Length: 119
Image 1 (cartoon, helix red, strand yellow):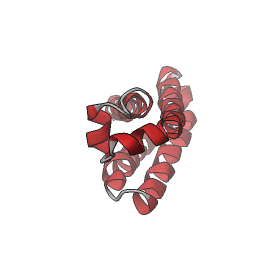
Image 2 (cartoon, one colour):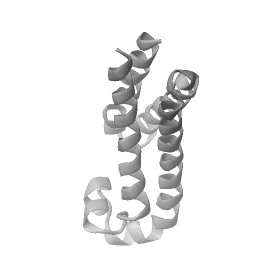
Image 3 (spheres, rainbow, N blue to C red):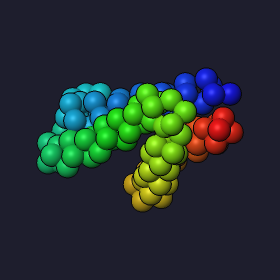
């Protein structure tokens, strides 16, 4: 179970690295426009805000990776950052776009349960 939980944490971290790339580097590109349903004008006007948001997603990924690298001693770090991802996903899903509940919050919740069970 520990290996499964560790892989799940790494997958959530990879998801947040991907979100970082989308928000920081692809926001105004075709992939970013399509992913977030933006017009080129709206993307250009909000690019700085998106880059800031992407940076926060990078911090979430870094925290999750840190927790995995710490091994068994990183359990509480993993739990903390998974809770951060879960709260961010719930908030985003309720205020911005419902799909965030399934893309961000649900994987965080499942992974949190796996990490908890692996303890």
